Image (cartoon, rainbow, N blue to C red):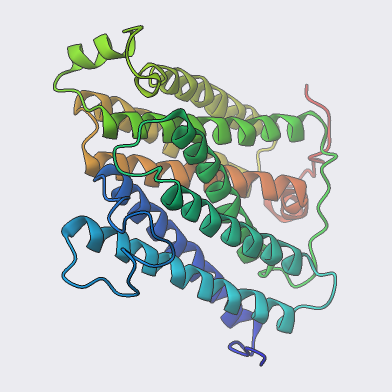
Length: 329
């Protein structure tokens, strides 16, 4: 049976952006599940919830976790529609087919990681290093899933297939380092958020004492690394953005780098507030939302460079054409 939902690329494009937005919401709800300690709400059962398809008289934690499972299940359905529609609308070998296949694979991996967390009881108050590792892998896969959906949306907007070229000289290397830095930062943030959830502090002083206590749980002692990584990646992000703005004074580049720098500056401020307020649930979710926005901004900039989009736009944006493959000055 063939799924035929969209009859035009325009409808498909709108659907992809909708899927991206929905995935961000599911990610945030997943953070709420973790922050409220509701991950064990369905027990060590998957895909069933406490051995039932629909839990009867569920507790609050069960309701929160079950809602997350339902929303995640809808992601799988949306991805099936997305893949089927892409193969129907775009010819063999088209880059959209490749990006949507990647999105489908990362969606499957996302579901399997969720199953691993539940079946191995790496939820609730579990404070093992194994849970921390799986949480980091979970975050990295989520980043890759979001990236695949964004690229699908971008590439489906082009009338002709995009040709990706990673040979963009030193600028391409700088952008690649920025993307890698964001992945490392996100992974460290996942561990920090887990530590804040399992070992909340009653004051800033107590929190700092826990961070440097050699007898404290490893999740607490790892928290100190996240602010340092965030500061380093922040300086790097803003520095690279300013360098690109000076080297390529085109309107499209100006907009992309301005958004990236501004959102990261906002994130640094939110990070400080999060520490001062002792990481309340609502702030953790807001912090994660902005993290995803930074990731999307980095991806937007990277895709524009590696696809040569800025080079094409520069002919109309600026009277003097400059190649984005030129070496660093």
